[in-house]
Amino acid sequence: MRFVSRPSRRAVIPLMSSMALAALAGACSSSPPTTYDLSAPRQAARGGGGSGAQIAVAEPVAVQALEADRILVKDSSGAISTIGGAQWADRLPRLIQARLIQTFENASRIRAVSRPSDRITPDYQLTSEIRAFQIDAANSQAVVEMSVKLVNDRNGRIATARVFSARSSVAAVNPENAAKALDRALSNVLLQIVRWIGTGQAPSAEASIVDPPAAAEPSSTASTAADESGTASDQSAQL
Image 1 (cartoon, rainbow, N blue to C red):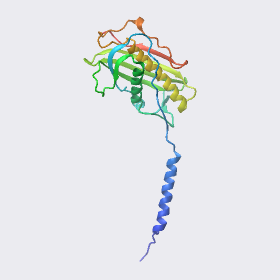
Image 2: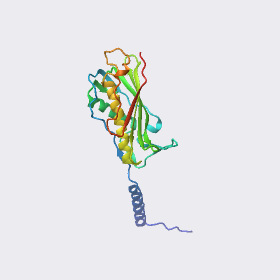
Image 3: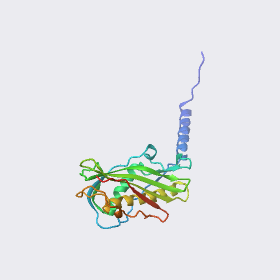
Image 4: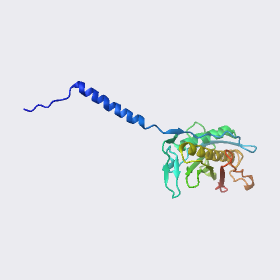
């Protein structure tokens, strides 16, 4: 009969402790990504008047690449990658929704703003799509573009729609510079949207739903940095 020796209990315990320490050291060697937030501008909307509407701001929709919390980079070939070691404070659509609501609140140009889940009956739903939110590596720019629609909550008809965009120079394609440049470009877009609604470009609750005259368009000049450019293109049709 053959006897097989087994390690003693005292020998097993040190072995297990060594394995646990090795696993812990490996986990500590990979540091967590740095988290970056987006800001809500506090500049007041230009122009007089305002809108008497109550607006519910829906979470923007986006393609899968923009649904996550990563900072994206697009190269000259159109290939998309992420910047390692960096992430947004939340999923990008939810983060932009929160900052757009805060920008409306900071400007105080409409009667009330809320989320669709709040217990408020709005006059209009503001729906949007994130078309671009990335670093254009070929041109060293942060690019933000959003399509926005104002939908009558009573009948579901689109009252008016626009595309807003802005660009901001980025000094280097690294986490800190990319996050700052995208934040500047987004601030420009958020201000454009709020001014569009708050200066009477979108219909009020009591007004008939018609497009404003072209001469009443607000200026879309940069407002958060000298190197930013912002544009707004009107897609609305008279209803």
